[in-house]
Image 1 (tube, rainbow, N blue to C red):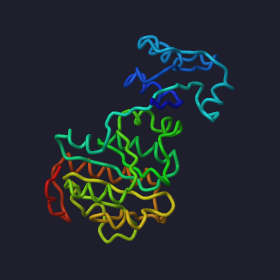
Image 2: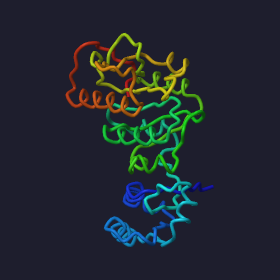
Image 3: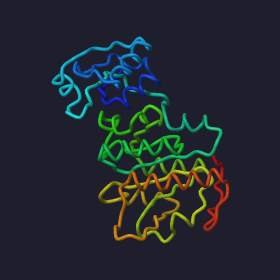
Length: 260
């Protein structure tokens, strides 16, 4: 059975049109939008032979469940590029980089995490099926197209998935405010799964115990913690920087067996 949903916002819909036009059933545009963004979208829809329907604001609100739809919505089929995470990893020819989010429930945070994942070359984002937000219309809008570029996997048992990744040669590194090692002291130049916890309580106990290493983000201000998407951006940038340089200083983590 083909699953479908509505997404909204110009960035999200334009990205889907460019990346996967065949997945769009139709686009709904506010009859009062006559600006350049609307004209560009109409032109792109025509180029891709995508049906575009003009409609009223009320209809858009009912479709999306929000008034913040920017005057555009699209009825789309859900993308399934890989059947499993293992399928994706088997096709990689470079060190793998994953972002694992344990219990993130705010769609704005998930959307922002997908954006930074796209920016720093993450191969997939992994979340638990339960007690976490999925790929809602709000996530699509906030992610600004990253939902279409970063594979997303919701797994039944997150701790078990982390153990399986370790067996595949991943280092599983989590963030924790009380961790003795800091981000700037760790070498991050091999296949890696970053694990970040929920907005309120952090990682669950079993998730934390599944990590090979815990690190803290060094901070000098009075704020004790950072938003999960900000933390993800910091950790992924440092990983990106080290992978680019292929050098590092400080804590040298032993090379895992059967590295991906």
